[in-house]
Image (tube, rainbow, N blue to C red; front, top):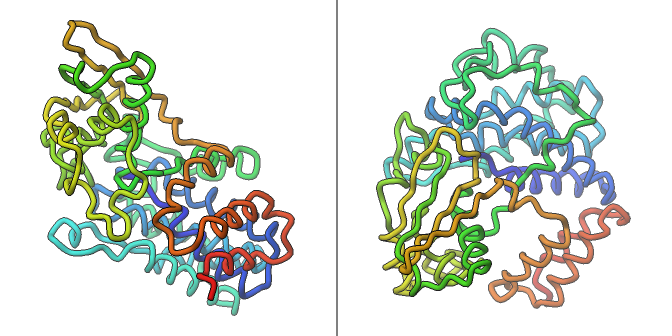
Length: 369
């Protein structure tokens, strides 16, 4: 539904760091720049771009690794400008393939093209001055106009300002609002696990007590990838992998396995608790034009006639380092490296700005002989 900045930015940043022998501090500076630029370019325009048949992940994802790499490689201002401009010519990502049974070519291709843009800019290739906002530029091509008119908006807006993209740049940090998608599912489903689980914990609600569950959600979350051509209707289907399924998991297990759907795990529907598969049929997803993105309002109706409600904020997965480290440790049983090596990765990341070589982190990811 949104974009996947980490998937795109971190690989590109490591390419640049290895090439330049960059320090951890320079690496982090580049990553922050990549996140901030990518998310500012994307923020208001994602639903509109998706409604035109483009996948916002790779379309905007090319800019993040390009800016990160350009910063790490210490490109000049003109070279950075050209790298961004060249990304416009190299951006892409169509939705019809995945809607018709194919597999998407997404962030992987975006990172490859980002590295090409940076390499060309570094060698002096000039990209142009108004490639983003011009009459024939990026926003005209992907959003349908360069005046900020929106077809769809998470907040119900009909217009966005292109000037807002650079307003407060370097002072106000949009990237701090990035969510950690800890579960292997669409981002709009993750709160249905944790918020529902927390509601059950707060009121000691158990599966056998539940009559039904209602979740009021942002309406765009129910029609992926776009209301223009939805291939999933979360408000009409209750099946393994659906929003209702994850809400049911939150009730039954008060959580969701982080390794579910990863590696050899078969994913949703295979070996699921029968209580989850039964309860998901009693979960109703209610679209709303006023509900915040990723912030469902969960109401659990119990068999004794009572009801309990919890309103999510949309900020539940904006974590500090300690919380991320705590939650991510659940992946350790599925890793090809020992737990001690993964702990070394966490420790290195904690003080990464003090490391002389950023690529030392890459070596920690490799299996030891």
